Structure formats: C-alpha cells, structure tokens
Length: 132
Image (cartoon, rainbow, N blue to C red; front, top):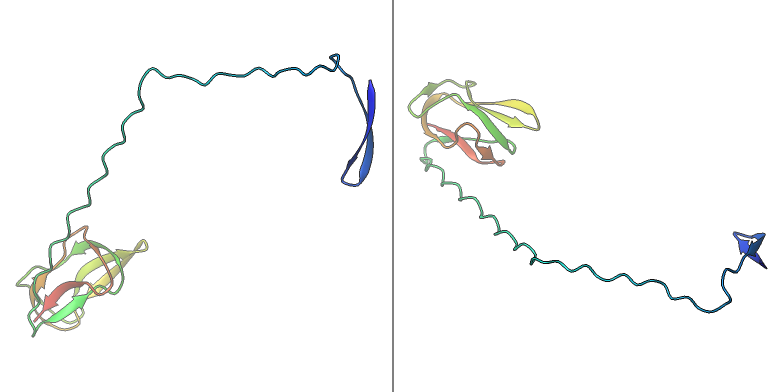
C-alpha cells in the first residue's frame, strides 16, 4: 500500500492506493474497428422547389385594390368576379397568428379580379381582390 496526500478545492485528503502488479506496465486491450459487409446507403435526392405562384390577374388602373394587411392564409373568399359589393362587405377572411381577420371592401362597386382562393398564403400588401 502506498499513501498519498491529494489537494482538491483547497482541502487535503490522505488516500491509500494498493498496487496490484509488480510495477511492470500493462497493455490495455485494443478493440478492432467494426467492418461492415455492405456499402452505406446513398444519399436521397434533394427535394425539388415548389412551382412558383401564378402571377395575379392584372388590376385595371381604375380599380381599387383590396390588399392583405399582414401575412397569413386565406380561409375563405366571399366574392367572385362580377359580384357587386357595398363598402364594408367582407370579401375575404384571412387567418394570421391563429386569428381570423375579416377583410372588408373599402368602397362599393363591382368585383373585377379575385387573385386568391381558399388556402392561399399571402404576404402583406398582396392584392386579394380588385373593385371597380
């Protein structure tokens, strides 16, 4: 048995260690690397990008655009081309941050373009509907 004094975090400890060999170095066993019979699986093909969105219908210069006030998803479109709307009529319902927002007609008139459908993702400023 051999005695040692060890300092740990400022405290001194006296320990006894028993020697189990005659002092000759002992080799540690070496493990062999694993060998696999098959080659690794090939990487999967990268996913293709989704098709770009179709360009929105042209809005006549005399028409008033109804734009998305924030990014979100269209839950319902309540008008179609040719419908007559009054100021304040709900033309679309936009879901943003789990809230349903009614998008209202800013003026009365005839719907000349509908650029979205149910489930369409929109950004702020995207033209949803045009009223003339």
